[in-house]
Image 1 (cartoon, rainbow, N blue to C red):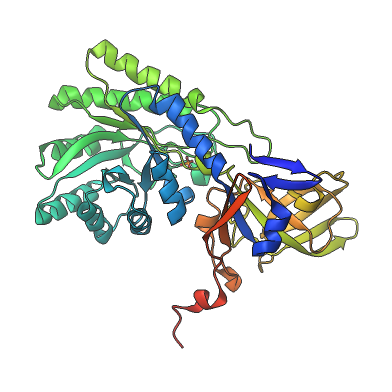
Image 2: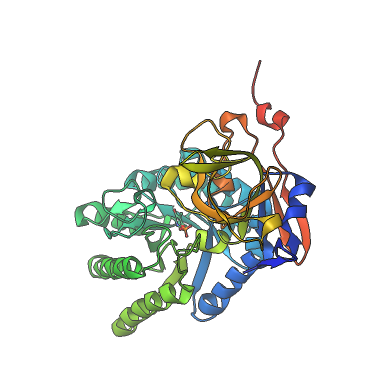
Length: 426
Ligand SMILES: *Cc1c(COP(=O)(O)O)cnc(C)c1O
């Protein structure tokens, strides 16, 4: 945890957040580099170096400007992209193509061509149609694509419906019905343009219980067995996705080992029993790497007391820089950075400046007496905040600053009005 209070002020990775808000203006996304690095170090120690032939592919969609791509690479990790844009960003940052994996339920032909041209590490195939497209592209270009099939293991995980992805009734993945999946696997094994690596699942996001990962692991091991029995083929890789939960307010974040050790044990036991070498195992954490490493700084503006009801405290951002509360009732906490040690005497609602009643950032929070001009920090906004930002109401997208050991550096410049209308034609 790189947040601390010194002389009544909030510091993050050694940097005074109130001063930073004045230096760059608000809203501002701030990330602690040490926090990000410590998560990767944790995974290195407790996963990558603990087990052989395992990899971590950071899920880019959580947060992925060029500087993050570089940091992920420097930390020795792979990356999981879900669009041509994320792939382009990785390549532009100098990310080794063979360490890039490509997920997504509707990759366009152009995106698949990009993936094949760059010779990326893996394409996670989401449908039979996609397999046919990849095969066609590879045939034309004389290349071979390394693929996994994403399956829907049919497990229910306990999270918000919009971030549950492993159940059968889902737009993601291939259902496990034999008549659907087995012919696809056969086609992939037989194709000279496809190198079939294995099976992928991703059961959901913001999970605190390892039950759905473990259930899904059993289900794909049963599939692995069927593949062996039917086609005599040993699967080379299993990808168990991401979804490991984080602390926004008072959730109890589980250590990575809570998820990964029992998954590995299950897989290793299965293969030991069969007397077969275990395939590679890959995980795809996004949120758990980056959520708590980020916070957002705002300046308090209008303060409104509705008699007998509540006090509304407005900040200079909102659903445009953090859509999660409006999108899936995500909860956050925060503090007035310049009053970080003052008694929290008021219960208020923190709202954004967008023209939507749903533009509420925090429904109820106890804070010190707010005044216009105070800096307000919302914690754990590092994942799916900046990457989901929009120009709604023609608010500009805030910049991103990395802080580390008391130093700060801009890694994404704040959008200007001119940037915002640059592609508009009069
Ligand atoms: C979103 C996603 C992840 C990352 O999920 P987190 O909850 O951020 O860890 C991993 N894999 C796939 C396929 C995803 O879509």
